Image (cartoon, rainbow over the protein chains, first blue to last red):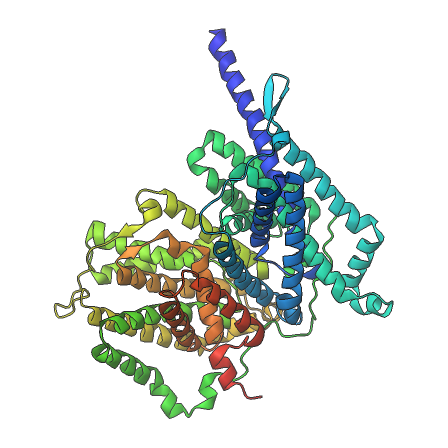
Length: 302
Length: 335
C-alpha cells in the first residue's frame, strides 16, 4: 500500500516543479512586457494599447533577421532596435498631440495604432503563423536533482531577471534616469535647466516599447509567430497591471510571475479552464483591492 | 523596489473630457426637434421600400451598428466611461437570438425579452466588477472581461466553438403579416428599434438622471461631493447601454443568420468606439453617421483589399487626433 502513495506524491511534486518552472519562465515574459507598459504609464500617464503589437513587432523583426543571419543575438538586437524605433515614432506622431487631453483619448489613439500595426504585419510578412527555432546553443536541457529543464526556459528566466533589474537600476540609480523622473515631476524646472523634456518622453516611450519587443523575440522560439500575438498578449498584460497595480514595478513583477505560474498550473491540473484562470485571479483581486496589489491610490484615481 | 509612479501629466483644473458644448437641440427650433426622430425614422423606413436588395442589406447593417453606437454613446459620450469591452454585450445578443431561434424556435418577442434580461444580468456582473475602478483601469477591465467571454464562447460546444452558431431561418412574430425572412420587413424592424433606442436615450438624458450622468462625465468627485452615489448612476448608465447593445447584437445575429465569437472580440469593441468617436461622442445622433462611415468603408474597400482594417485604423488615429468631437460635434460647435 506504500507504493501507490509514493507514486501519487511523486506525481504531484513533479507537477509542482514543472508548473513552477514553466510558469516562472512565461511569467518573466509577462513581467518584461508589462514592465514596458507600466514604465510608460508610470512616467507619462499613457496606457499604450499597441504595446502588444510592439511585442509582435519585436518578434517579427527578430524572425526576419534570424532568417537572414541565423544568429539569435542579432535577432534580439534587431528586435530592440525595431521596438525602440516604432515606439519613438508613435510617441512623436500620435501621442504627443494628445498630451493636453484626457488619458482616454491617448488610449483610444493607440487602439487605432494597434489595428494599423497588425495589418502591417499581415501585409509585410503574411497572415499565416511562422515557426521560430530555438537557437542551437540554448536547445539542450539541464538536469537538476533528478529533474530535467529545457535550457531555453532557464535562459528566459535569467535574461528576464537581468533585464528587469537593469531597467530598475537605470531609472533609480543613473543620472539620466534621475533627469527623466525629474522631468515628469516638474517639466518646467527641468526644461529651464537646459534639458530637452520632449526627448525624454520619446526616449521613455521607445524604451518601454523596446522591452515589449525583446519579450516578443524571446518568447518566439516557444510559441512561434502570428500577427495577432500582440493582441493576445496585451489582454494578459492588462490583467497583470490591473492585478499588480499600474505604475508599480513591484506589482508588475509579483503579478506577472503570479499569473504565469497560475496559468501554468492550470494547464497541468485543469487544462479546460487554464485560459480563464488569469481573469478569475483579476476579478478576485479587483473585488478585494480595486487599486491592485501594489497600486498607489493617487495614480489609481486618475 | 518602490513605485516609480509619479504624477500623471494632467492639469487638475481642466475639464475631464473634450465635450460638445452645444447639444444639437439648441441649434434647431423645438417644434422641428420634437418630430425630428419620427421624421428621420419615417425617411429611413421609406428607404426600405425603394432600395434594391444589396443596398438594403448595407442599410440594415448601418442601422444595426447605429443602435449599438447610440447605446455606446450613453456610456462613453454622456457618462464619460470608456468601455473597451462592449463587444461582450453585442456578441451575447447575437448568441442569445441565434440560440433561441434554432434550438428553442421561440418567437421574436420572447427572444427580445430574454435578450433584455441577458443584457441586465451581464451589465450588472461586468459593472459591479469593473466600476470599482476608474478611467483606464475601467477600460482595461471591461476589455479583459469581454475577452473572457470570447474565450468561453470559443471553447464551449453550446456556442459552436470557433465556427459559431448558424441559423437557417429568422424567428416568427406574433403578427402574421410580418415575415422577418423578408429583408424589407427585417430592415423595418431594425429601423423601429433604432428609433425606440434613440427616443429612450433622449428621454433618459433629459431626465435628472441624465444630468447626473453628465455631471459624472465632467467631474465625478464633484458629483460625489454634492451627494450623488455615483457608483449607482454609473451602473445604471452601463446597464441601459448594455441592454441596448445586446438588442443591437440580437438583430445583428439574425441579420447575418449567424453568431460568431468574432462578435465578442476586442476589435468589435474598437469598432463601436470608432463609430461613436467618428460621428461625435455625446451627440446621440452622431453614431448613425459613424456607422454609415464604417460600413461604407468596409463595403468599398473589402472587395479591393483584404487589409481594409488598415484604413479603419488610420481613420481611427486621424479622428482621435484631428476631430475629437466627430462629424456632428464639429458641425454643431459654436466657436
